[in-house]
Structure formats: C-alpha cells, structure tokens
Length: 160
Image (cartoon, rainbow, N blue to C red; front, side):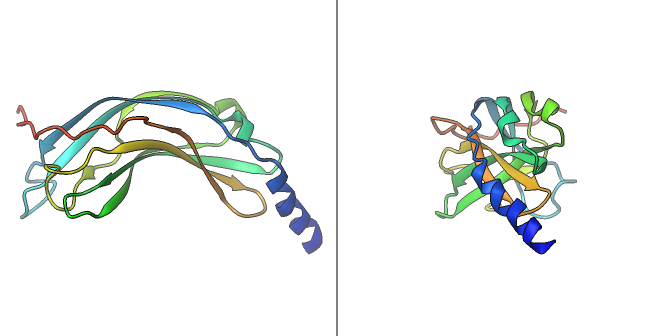
C-alpha cells in the first residue's frame, strides 16, 4: 500500500501545468483607519480594486483535491523590509469552477505596520495558487502578475 501511495505521489510531478491569467489593478486608495480598527496608534488602510481572469483547469487532474488561489501584494516598506501580504483568496474545489473571472476588492485588511503608506515603494500584485493533492506534496505557482508596480496614493480623508 505504501509503495502504491508513493507511486501516486511521484506521478503527480509528471503532470506539470503552467496556467496563465490576467490581473489588472483598477484602483488603490488609502484611508486613515477609524478608531475601532486600531486602538492607540494612527494607522492607514489600503483598499485595492482588481480584475482577475484565469483558466486554472490545467491544474486539475486525478490527484488534485482542490486549489487555494490568492492575490498577494508585494512591496518594500519605508524601512526597507520586503512584505508579501495576502489581500484576497478563494478555494476552488472542482475543475468546472476553475475558470476565474473575479472583479472585486481586497477581502482582508491591508495595512502597513509602520502605520503609513507614505514613502512606501509601489507594489507588485501576483495571483498565486497552491495545488492540494489527494496524495503527495503541495505545489505552488503563479498564474498572473502585474507588469508595472502600482503606487500607493496619499491618504484620503474618510467621508462619514
């Protein structure tokens, strides 16, 4: 039984797929956080609107249980620290659902730990995936990436 499972796990490496997709960042807005989001320190939050198109069906084969798809912002802050922040994700369980056409905004709070996006380098955004097999190791990949980095604008005041 162990030999069969090992053979199944190793055979998954024979099925290499390189899915491609498109990623456009429609807008990035930065606002000061309200008091309820953070207690003592002033903080800024970024809101990213995006358009994703991708065909991930080549990743599905007999050993694919599901895909974990996520949008990641990659940037270097004003202190020179590289950050990779997941701002949106989706689980794809069936091959029929693997053609992605998503228009939306970040699902998770996107804030800079130094409290401000001022003087932060522009960010690249990448659509990445994780293939979760029935048997074997997890595999990672990238389906789309912004060509040009997207700058963080000056903070805007919130309208109540």
